[in-house]
Image 1 (cartoon, rainbow, N blue to C red):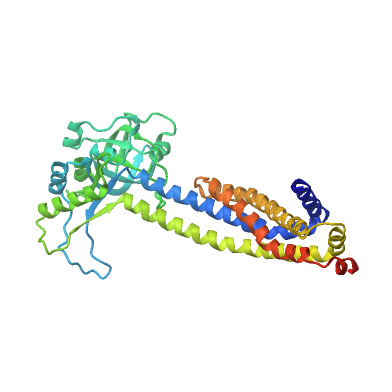
Image 2: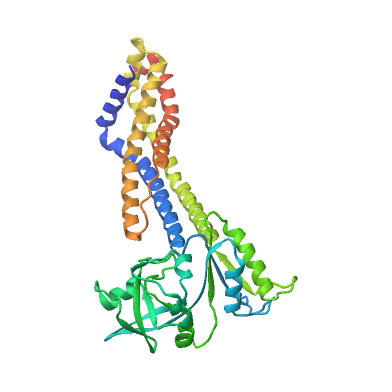
Length: 402
């Protein structure tokens, strides 16, 4: 019985193909918009998490505190130095790496070619903290770190610019006005979430950087990687206690350093993109309601057109529930078809957007099933009143209808 009802519903939809298509267009657009928005939003969230993860796992970054926009401070400004680094290296028991770092953008030259690249001075803990290993070559030896040797590792962008696919190991490049022997090529990191090419970099020992590039002994930042299984919040508390003691900050005075927890930043950015995705999905969902109104409208027209048919069926013994089920199934089939087409269209749009925006394509099975179920629900809800109206027609009046 039900199979026959579905067959009749499909026959009715096919008999009025253009009208049916225009009716389900609202459902198609609504479902496609919801699927596309949520899929693109999920991909954006994944990209944000991935970009933050590229900076390093369980990473905290310590930097000198800066005055506010008005230029006022509630602390005595002070640059980070070797004493701070040493205190953290010896005082932190739950950190797997503590790396001092200083950076400056300079001209890097090889032969007749030159580029502008950030040069970072640091030690081997930097590669541990940032989860960044050499793809070719090696990191620094202890004598090279202590003596500030003229050696460096380069990023993939610098390698491609100067050496193409060739082997740069052992080659000498000029960093600012100093020669530097390439001992390694770092794994590619790609573009960060802030649009910075992380592979356009030269890394050299901190002492050599301070002596030849910066001209001072300042430390711009300290990278601290929490040990596996240790919460970054616990490490942050320890860092604050150690630095306040090392810097002799009074109990009632503000910190003259900042600590950025990259895990918290990743969670905040992911939460923001998730909220935005939900809002866009809700806005797109409004078009589903508009599509449902279109289904109701066309079903009312269908009941009016088929009044005599309904009268004949009632006169030869059909029950009201048969008429009710027939029109409900018809409305549900119409909405389901729109939902299926909308899913295909939405995923296609999301795939194209993911390729264009260079974000992961992250469709959600739960969202797709929800879209199918919701489109069917819309058909039943908005088709119920026209179906009820058809089922309650008086057989005699229906047979008189022209």
